Length: 134
Image (cartoon, rainbow, N blue to C red; front, side, top):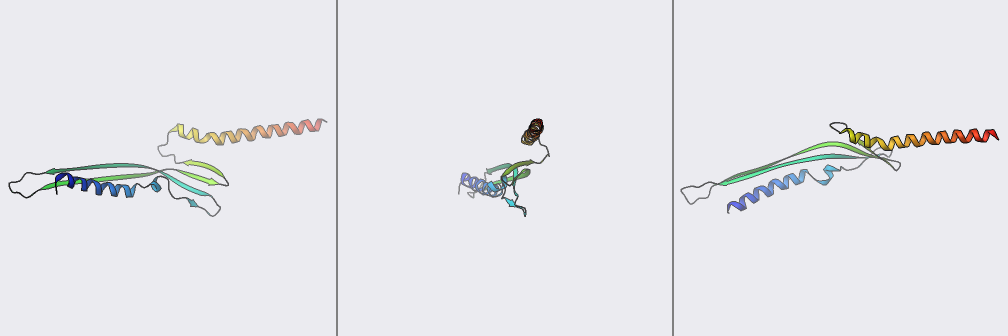
């Protein structure tokens, strides 16, 4: 077996193990349904590191000597949950190291809902006052 084949074998084995850890379901997890019908989907960030190397050491005999190694690491960090309840979807972002811009963007739908409710309330009050005048 030549040196390239041995290194390829090391790399292939390490990459297969990293692939097992970093599956698609690790990033967007399996949905969890609660008793009240809320569906919660976890979302994670995955970081992968990988290294390998090898050397063919010269010897006085015809026997081949090869030294090599490979390794990898995976870091999985939960960053958010997607919650679905009665057709309404919300992103519940964890605040650990979250940029302020993301927090502001996540608040926009809630702010719009509050403004719309306030305008609808004022319009209803105005309509009630107009109907009392007649």
